[in-house]
Length: 489
Ligand code: BG6
Image (cartoon, rainbow, N blue to C red):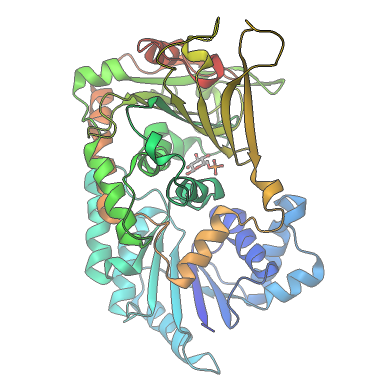
């Protein structure tokens, strides 16, 4: 069995205690962490292993109850945890880290060393360079890079250049945590483990595809970070485009990481490029105003803490694009994401075409057409919407019904959360669910004209009330093609 060391740079940061530690604990609880593992948290301040363990234990009180360890469970998990103070610009601190990695295990160095960079991205270059200089870049070492991976194409390329000067591409694990979500893995299974849908998965049968990543939450206390980012960089460039590639890609010839990533890259390269007229026509940006979410009055974006007055930062994006190839020519792909929307709801809706010749009364019209809904959140599942006869008479109107698959019920004990899946994959060296540098750069290349057009535009985002589905222009974008968002159908 493989032994591993996992080094968490940013070991006291939000991401570590909110996502990574709970995920590692779940993996430990489920018996999925390979034995012989050690987890080393690295941060700036001085503290002992025990003080760090106490810090993490306390933070677990903020994790949802079913994912919290009992005292006994925590004691077992805590035995894996270690802490080390590092100044990330000091070469001798990396030499010390190397000694820890190489000399401090009684059974010799671990088979795998995962360097997880859960820090601000401006530190990625210095950490990678220093790891390289200290010789911590050999074939046993993997580096995991957390999002955001750059701010635009040039900064993403800068980061990739440094990463590539130190590590091989197979050692670089770029995280997009949406790829770790069970529903996304099920999308691969649905498309390439079943013969049923493939003949229909094309322009002849599909009218349009909608990807919605809606959040009920606002920016919270992250106003300063968010204001420099905005929804296009935060959610579209990565999560929404990754989902689009998995929906639109051609069947890969194997389940290997590069076979899959080659196909995803082809989709990104086939997306219709944005001219400035296309940005004005096909992209809607919005910003929330005060409103009500789940019965609670909430402030507008400009009233949130650390948001600069008059900010034009977008908290909502809806856009229309096309994948320019034989399979998808002319099929609109609508992407939509936003904060403070009506619900936390992430789903992909595949709307099929109408029957060519309706014979039942009242059954024509897209609102009644067949659709497949791939639900990511709040629960993951699949719904297949059909029209059926209730059996009420010879000339009756058809009624919509759906076949629903709830994965929590289908697999009650085997669900693995996104970060747990991705951490286990990084430890095991499985790259399938990680983003390759060329995919990431191509995604930036595609969104950049939108960023440029917005930078020239003094009007700013369209307002929408918190608790709504975004500005009315988002509905108009889809209605223009004779379609409607799922909740309007
Ligand atoms: C992150 C974004 O990548 O994804 C956040 O930076 C967003 O702004 C989050 O809230 C959403 O992730 P999830 O898994 O809660 O849908």
